[in-house]
Amino acid sequence: MSSTEEKKYKKFITIISIVIPIAVAALFGIKIPNVEPLSFLPPIYASINGFTAVLLVASVVAIKNGKRKLHEQLNTIAIICSALFLVMYVAYHMTSDSTKFGGEGMIKYVYFFILITHILLSIVIIPFVLITFMRARLGNFPEHKKIAKITFPLWLYVAVTGVVVYLMISPYYV
Image (cartoon, rainbow, N blue to C red; front, side):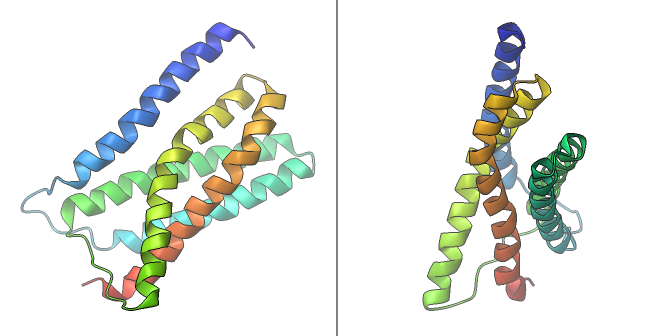
C-alpha cells in the first residue's frame, strides 16, 4: 500500500464526508413544487436499512468464518444500500412535508433520543465506512480490522435505528 494512494483516498473521503451531510441538509429544505409526494418511499428505505443491518451481521459472520470474498461483497452491497437509502430519503423529503411524531409522554423522549442519535451517527459513520472500505481495498488489513471494530457497531446502530424510527413514526404518516 502506498501512502500516496492512501492520501488520495483520504482527501476524497474528507470531501465526501463533508459534502454529503451539507447536501442532505440543503436538499432537505428544498421542496419541488407541483410534484406528487413520494409517500411510498419511507417503508422502502426503512426496509433497505433493515437489509443493510442483516448484510452487516452476515458480513461479520463471513469474515469470522474466513470467507473474505463474501465479506467484501456483503460490505459493498451494504454501502450501495446505504447510498440508495440516502437518495430515497432526500427524494421523499424534497416532495413531502416532514411527519411530526404524535406520541406523548415518555415514548416521545425515547423517540427523539433514538432519532437524534440516529441522525448524528449517520453523519459520523460516513468517514468510518469509507476509511474502513479504503483500507481493505488497499490491502491494509491490520488497520482495516482496527477501524472495522468501531465502524461495525456504529453502522449497525444507524441501520437498526433507521428501522426503529420508521416504525415509531409510521402511524403518523398522512
